[in-house]
Image (cartoon, rainbow, N blue to C red; front, side):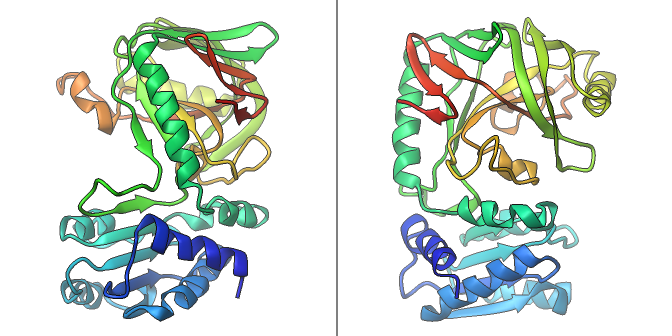
Length: 335
């Protein structure tokens, strides 16, 4: 038994999801990569104290799995441990289970992470919800009362956002105000969007971005320049230019900045990396999304406008200031 991992997973169940002895727990897993195997084995140890079942996704037919889901007791907890992403005809497992009133813990695309990143991923599962809640409250309060966000990337590079902001979305692991809890892990993030998308100007350093194979591409840090909310130039690799070209070809010959993200997970960072990009965006630092698509703020842009792309870029910044308050410096939040 991995005592540290056991504690992390136990905390997810008891502190984040507040599972009690009356909750039925179903673990659905595969063993297609070492990280999935390790998580699955430790979850099996954790759920021994509950009414439970554990099934290997690859050893059952779709019909058998659906039958198991149909017979779940009300308000069960389902844990999905996936080397890639479980695929079933016409079914999105996490969404379907949630709609039926079940709680869901999801670990997906685990095989995307490299062997040397395995411990970093496991570290990112540590229980840090009180810290996330505190940081989110402070950041949200600053966003509510200030229009100016300034990012400094060194060598005189500055990116400035001068706008009011949309209601921030938080990913803290606190489900106390929700009837049903569902989350992908790791967690730790707050993000928003400028109400005036054209009020983003300046330059910022980027050190990674998702490539066309849906993995994080690490590279020498490069400069991205933004004018009136759109990317106008960069000094990055050809792979980054390919992404910009693809977005422009389908979204009106521009690359719009939308999401303004503040990752909070202290186990992830510039030197603490995992390759699965949806997880890595929780790293303690700054990220933005490229493209017109944003599911959480979709009503902002008319449905008549084609919105396809949401590609995160991961930034290497020295300082972040909201209004006159320094919130981030030297790789950590200083609020």
